[in-house]
Length: 236
Length: 236
DNA sequence: GGATCAAGGACCCTATAGGATCTTCGATTG
DNA sequence: CAATCGAAGATCCTATAGGGTCCTTGATCC
Image (cartoon, rainbow over all chains, first blue to last red):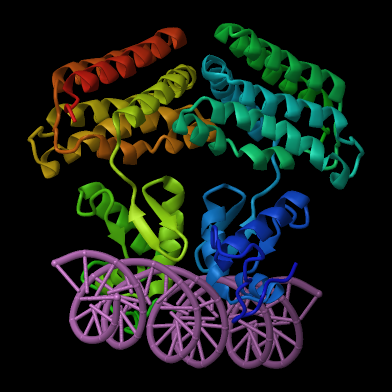
């Protein structure tokens, strides 16, 4: 949890190859991202630069750099001279917009990925679906975290398999691995079996080699996700 | 009244506003962005943190923050312990991917914007087309810069008029005002009249209130842009 | 002559200090 | 009692210093 203080750089356990050296800002970035996704930092909470630095035993400089990167992901928002705060909770309007955008982008990803599918790609996707089935579905975040991770991984893999860097960027702009975690304010997973079947249908369509069928399967999946979420929406 | 101008800040020959809610990192960000788009920083060139700080008469700290934000836009790339470099020039493969992504996103934007078009929106779009006609089309960057700006503004306005923050983010992920400027390695503007007519056609379709026609007009425009660029591609 | 290596400089990275600003909370006043 | 003002603390922001790393250059050696 705590990062090393100044001075000692972790010597590689594998002798001879200092593969990818990480800088403190990278560690801080990952730490903050994990805190945000685990729910330890709740929407609206302040993220103090100095406070985070003290907590992680680093100086404020790398924390500033990490937060500057996080801001561009939409996870945190900055107000000049006031600091950073965790982005507010999703509204139903936000959710509707997100689904509209997913419906525009993800079927295209499926169509493009279908044309480039390789056995290795298929194996990765199949593993994501398998992980989805194995994942626990309890009510607490710790329990459905793995489920959400596998879900997001499935969709991100398809984006990456398009071979189009801009489609990957567009998918990431939706907050890929991020916004999804914030939709469930403790609601947990509902209708997991149905969702898994839809993922399997997308996978089958991809492996069939039919691009249009793949796009249709993905579109149907997103629409059904939207329908289920609306049905389960808390009446606030 | 804390509006008294403090003479502490070294007024560089670049910055302007005495009292501003902006911090130095914002100024540095804008300055770097302008340098990148003006071509003063060429692809592949190193962007030194300390050097930039000296040039702008600021300390390296705000420069680090500005570069951390720029990295996420794809304009510059960072290698740990080595620094930042301007992203390399677009290849034809990159261009093909960009057009594929635009073809997936921008027609959807047109369809959504059409349903929400207001007179104010129309006026903004019409002004963008008018600016496109008025802009000079000389061979040097300074001459076709205004043209590119109006072009990008037209497309960005449509994205914003969808009222969908995620479609705006997805459009921005394409590098909206950015990548466009890097496609032209001094090639200048070709077939401007044709492009302007296509923009006008999109505008007409939007004002007709027909969403599908709007989407089709946008799709046709993007496809023709791709066709023209391929025809003009330098044989490298 | 070509390769190796050491020295120097430029640069990146982190920590620390101090000024500027915002927020909180208690005191003062109508 | 309510509203306003002011001071203290926390926080943000910027500058500066110093250590670590990378790259260039020039000298040494085979």
